[in-house]
Image: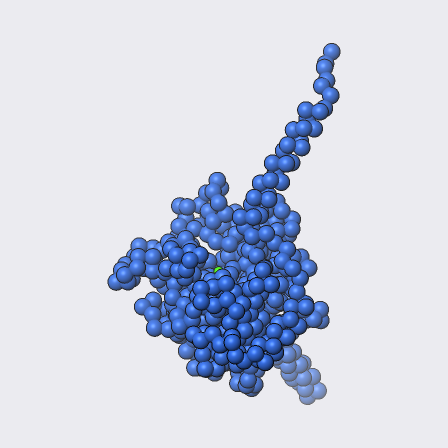
Length: 484
Ligand code: CA
């Protein structure tokens, strides 16, 4: 009898241990679109573009009605998202140029990605798609917290495999899988999606109890405008031929997201996976800067990429997590791309003791435990911070940027969320308050340390020219030897 009791006790102990050790932490997937227009998805607008997979995720989770990125274009926005810190904290306010022999051209090594924080507490981590945070080896994804990388290091890429060339610009370089160069043989967005779905399948079959974090960083629908002819045919009724191709690019991205969702379902990972979707900035829009860029639709917001108006920094932004987030939620509070890192590390139980993370854990807001705005104010500045800056609270937005019909502006975001009426000549007390918020925030920033791409390439060309001239001069000055 005693033996039976002991055996029973042992079995119970084993059961309790297995329960204790089952990892309940969610998988986390961040899907980032590139230069997507606010109105170009089914769930954000009235659009002819078909996005059934994203619409289903939005309907099954929470739509952040006031979701923002920290910068109106690619590189700095991604630096903020991945570190969970305003990129001006570490002077990264321009795009990183692809320059693999430059040991300083990348996301500063003083900064830690949230993938790294998750990796430290047992998550398997992957980035698939656009990196844009440095080409030198120590900046590459495998050295910044990602176990797995499939994609490209520069800020964009051609979509057709026959445009890959070693002798061309960064957009035509071969893809990489971890540290190896690899070829792809289908439309790029599909290749990235297929790889992301395969990552889900592989990790599920290897070790289902290990949670994973995947950053699926599409370059779609960023230029160049390229899409499969069959998909463009779905949109030939649109008048603008640029928009026909762009629509097909968004459509392909949505189909790719469908492939990832199918993989999650097939491998029983769907329920406990938290998916975020957002764009890194607003869509391009025709303006005096670039009148030819006429394919995206940021309505009802004004302006777009590179602008601090809502069209540049307010983005389609959702979260989906069947295990925790109720369906059909719409959330009005201020949500930032910085919150993705804070939320992920909180859910993973990762280390934040360096005190560097600035976002808010959105979990209690997404589950409905907390209401109100996660952030009291959001802030922006561009490199030229003396004249391009913005701050918004739930009630107001105060900004300065030389845009047609804008410059210094104040908007009542409660009554005028699309920024139609600049009332900068009134509400002076409120402007003083917002200016103080911005100035206090800006005290923690450093000046920009990165040249923009063209300036950088000119400086780099000059460096190599001078190096060569120096070598040549040294050679000329050397003693000539004779042999006997
Ligand atoms: Ca972008």
